[in-house]
Image 1 (tube, rainbow, N blue to C red):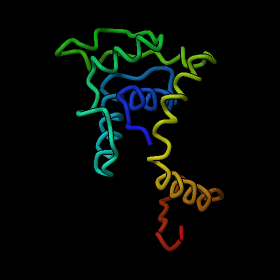
Image 2 (image 1 turned 60 degrees about the horizontal axis):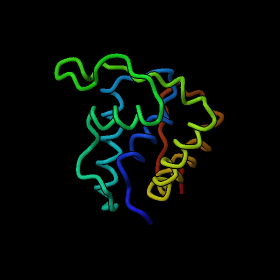
Image 3 (image 1 turned 120 degrees about the vertical axis):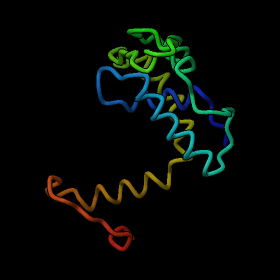
Image 4 (image 1 turned 90 degrees about the vertical axis):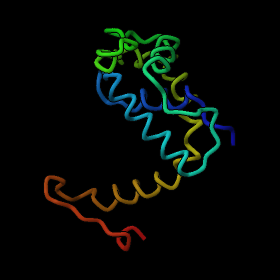
Length: 138
């Protein structure tokens, strides 16, 4: 398997955002969590640290996204907003999927557990407190 790249972390975070816009603070937290999880699993990467605002800005601009605010500003950078409406473009979706797919082999175990849980809770009222045990999944 090829090592994880900075662009794959950022693109995966962008493509999975369900809203029309996201703050840099949120993207940094998502990519940091992904990076930490991958390094905990001892996955080989070309990345030494979680992405910074500058890294996210460069990746987003190269993919054609619009940014509101200045993400590199020391005091207000985390409040900068990435406009995600551009991800509806077919060619951009293809580019994002290319980078995202680089991470898929590393998330397979987690994907199996999530799929099992979603199968178990498919007919339940999710407004109630729900407990799923490992025995339910296995």
